[in-house]
Image 1 (spheres, helix red, strand yellow):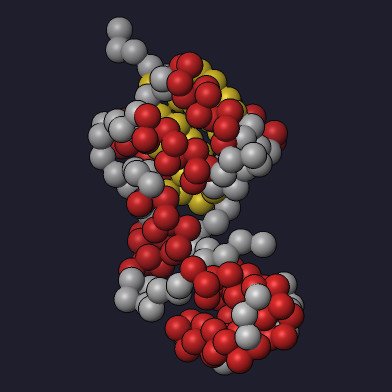
Image 2: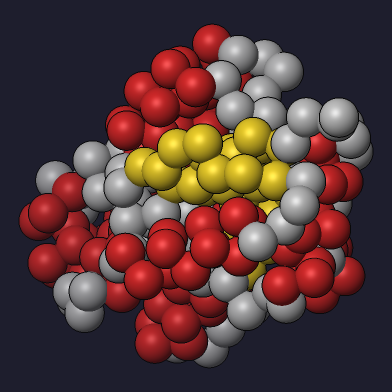
Length: 207
């Protein structure tokens, strides 16, 4: 008899975690061998159970899903990881793929597609839904923001004025103003509100 695909589900929301686990355990060729409620626990449970597939939410307490993916892949280079998250921004996807994730799904995925993705990744292949691949491709050549610009952008999104940003980052107000100007240009937006909205949608920043 062929062995079942052994799965670790890492998700901090109880209802989502129980729901996904129930769906998986209904499949004749799959079983959930462990669950985790944060990224740190996901790493610990991975070490203990060595699952075939790990489903990771991107936003979890203590350690994020992305940090967990990086940690797991550093210790277990052949780990097969699938992101299952609410966030479908191109920067979120890009970071996850760079961390070694083999598939990226948003939580509105249909049950059949989720199961198909698990089997695909278990077979050693990668998968990215068409809509997410299009989002990634649409911004492939967009100018990248520097680390400092991202810091400024996070403060812009919190509603801080240039003077407040300058004080928070210990830089001159004119420097803060120039950073904001560069950010608007790189994101192809007209004002600070649009910049914050675009950055959150794309996963450049998270509040």
